Amino acid sequence: MDIKACIFDLDGVIVDTAKYHFIAWREIARDLGFEFTEEHNEKLKGVSRMRSLEILLEIGGIILDDPAKEILADRKNKNYLKYVLQMTPAEILPGSKEFLLELKKSGIKIALGSASKNAMTILDRLKITHLFDVIVDGTKVFKAKPDPEIFLKGAEELNVSPANCIVFEDAEAGIEAAIAAGMKCVGIGNSEVLWRANWIIRGFQNFSITKLNDLVKS
Image (cartoon, rainbow, N blue to C red; front, side, top):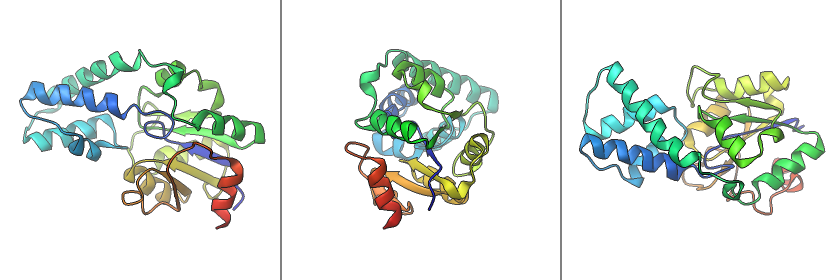
């Protein structure tokens, strides 16, 4: 495989904002009168804000109309942003920035493919926006993962064939989206959850282009 581009999810791959999402959703659930657990939160990984809200309401056995859902989704986002706006570059996951810098120096194109509508704010807080050639976030796509739209749009904007792209993902929905896009995928995290990925690593600490090439050749 000739690697011409790498496309990265954001949450759980470059930075751990999952903890802030969890806190914000838990606050919404408590307002609605039920407990939202970390186990429940696993079902929200890699999906859009509105789909996350729908899953949360299903867990609580609550039915709301669309206007009420919009109000709750907006409230959750405001809760989440309280924490995001306090983020610093120290919260970048170990090895992530170093790997991005190595890709940049090597001439491999870099895209972000995240469902988050707050992706730009997070990248700016981390001071790594400049490392991405293309940023495709929740404001640019209509279909949530596992639909491949977000990754296909990233490849299109990079002007690279999907067959020459590698996706880095930590969520099952993201892995499925990469497969549907015709791209190879590196899962970040738990092999039991991410077993459909082509390769799985624990994280980017001590990871390099050489190690990525070794994975591709294996």
